[in-house]
Amino acid sequence: MRLTSNLYRSVNWEQTTAATGIFSTSNSDSTPLLNKASSEHMFDTMAMEIEQLLARLTEVNDGMADYTQNLGVNSQSAALLHTLQRHRDILQDYSHEFQKTKTNIVAHREREDLLGSVRRDIDAYKNSSTTNRRSDLYLKEHDHIRNSERLVDEQISIAIATKENLQSQKTALKKITETMNSLANRFPVINSLVQRVNLRKRRDTIILGLVISGCFILLILYMFH
Image 1 (spheres, rainbow, N blue to C red):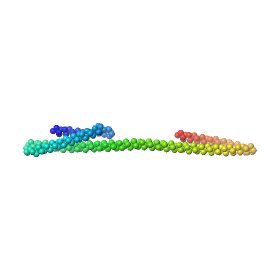
Image 2: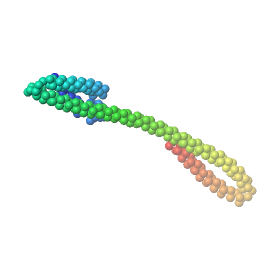
Image 3: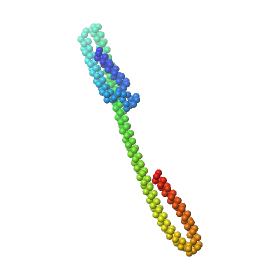
Image 4: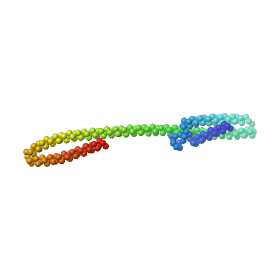
């Protein structure tokens, strides 16, 4: 009877463990109610103890069966047979309940391991994705800077070429002006025409200067944008 009582308490503990769960997932799948290693060790130890108790109870039932076979047919043997059958039913119930509980807990542990593995894969993927996104952002920023430098170099080259062209035009206009002044001194009508040309030239020079100044301002704004 003491063996049966111990087995009954062990199976009840196993049922409670299966009902509550070795690992609590109600709050968070990643936070066990008990330490995982100690919980698994506790489960394995209790499972081994229960299996030993079941084996001992089986031996007791077998011994009771052998004992009742040696008795004659009387009221005492009938009572023993009834007790033996009752103990066999109890053993069968305990064995069935233990196997069911053990299977549930093993399945729960496998599920926890699978979820942990999936979670680790997700975390690794997130870390890898974050690193890749940062690298992509750095590369894009580097390309943007390179493109900006290239555009600035092109604008500077255009400005230098424009300056050289303007200097060449200035030299040519200076020669033309000297020639026209020489002719104007000789011919008054030509002098009047030259003055008009000079006025128009000054106007064009002012307009051209304003255009060039605007271009340089836009270039400077683009460089510091």
